[in-house]
Image (tube, rainbow, N blue to C red):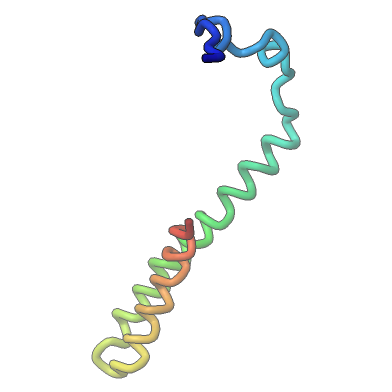
Length: 81
């Protein structure tokens, strides 16, 4: 009833979207550091804790179990929706 013609120009970005300045270097650095630091922490702590858990596996099975769980929890935190 109230139909309007669809044209490709109706869905194209406006000219102001193309004229935006790129983000500043400080902002880009902050974004990268906020993303990279937790990943580096998990990447370092996971093998350390798993190695420790494998080392104590035969002498103390309870500690082994807890360390393996402790190693996997930070990786699961990255899977939050």
